[in-house]
Image: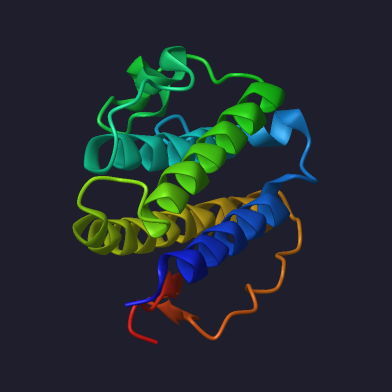
Length: 177
């Protein structure tokens, strides 16, 4: 298993790769749904952050949602037709950035031992970050497919990390590399 500081760098690398996939797109491209029963790139962006917050909140520290109005929209348990309209690109960006700051703050506290049961939470934090990174890349695969096949944009290079490889076509962090 990797140390938490190294995993936070991998988390940032995964988020930076996500940004390369969408930051140059127009708001219309971010909110466009390729099919009626598929999600827009913007939904995937919000969902990535929603899951990160949900997992950190439930596994390491109970804290309120940074944007409760987005919880129902970004929850994959809700069928697409019941999720509601996507927020603006600006609001999505702020949501993603706020969640990432919270992930860093909580995992930073765990890494520094500023929590109860710091050794146990370090194990939880390591597995948690690995899951968050791989979840980010899971949705990046779909975002990349829409970006290239449907919207006609080139894909960025894969992230430069000796811990990242492809499994079944998906970028994946190997927790044992």
